[in-house]
Length: 348
Image 1 (tube, helix red, strand yellow):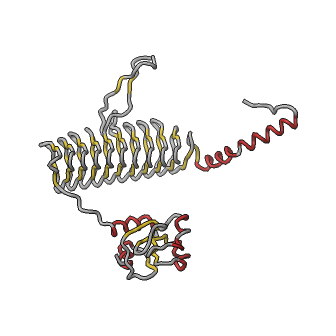
Image 2: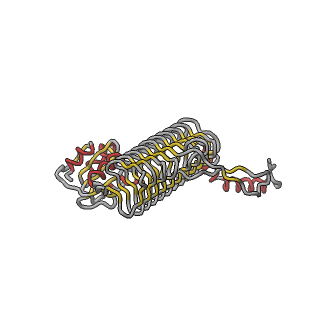
Image 3: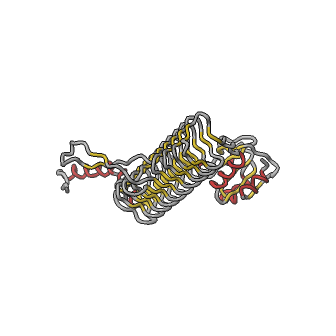
């Protein structure tokens, strides 16, 4: 694609020869002749001056100061990540998905399939409703009573169990499990050593339009009400959403996050990798939870927290600095004790 045409498609500013052609996008360190290098993070931009790419896609702020130093043409973007996504769409057009039911698939006679539905080999579809353009990947399972909205995709080997409703334009990754029962047990007696009785779940799972669920992620059905994920929420690979959890629109849950039952994640909240949320806890709207944090109490709207148990992010940073100084502090205390000839008073 010519750079001039690509710049128009991306809505970015072109600095350099618009007649140059690029064939694909690569990281700035790997890009070579005929390729568009992408650089946005500071460590990437430090190497932009020595790139062998035919052109660079960079932030507008960097281009304003350093474009004249670049050894190639520059595409300057106000929103580099969005421009990257558009560049990939332009240079790597997605192949048309096959339509129709593969002869090796099993589809219930009572299933309702919209126009241009694709069901891959080995997939099993019960008495479900699939909207127009839905794609069911190979070896996936869609149970009786499931409703999947138009243009949604179910990845290979994913399980969409009873009581699940999926909106339009949703993405369900390979191996994901939607609608299994959660971890709810009733104790037989006061003896904790006795096995507990599982409680049957009567709720379902609702994914609104545009939700993305990553590979091998599990979203449990509700015990008493539907587990609900709001529109355009992004749930990464290997995430666990417990029963009756409510996730707001546009929330982001990064890999290996675990949210226990009856908890609420507010709209636009971001939970970094491996964060854990205690049952019946609320993470507020637009809140930020750091990686590996342990959320054991409610987090206010817009707050940024980290650590286990969570505390304000700035306080956690200060605590980590002090923690690194404990060895030096201990040496100072021991030296003082030796000078005094007696141990300092120890407080409980």
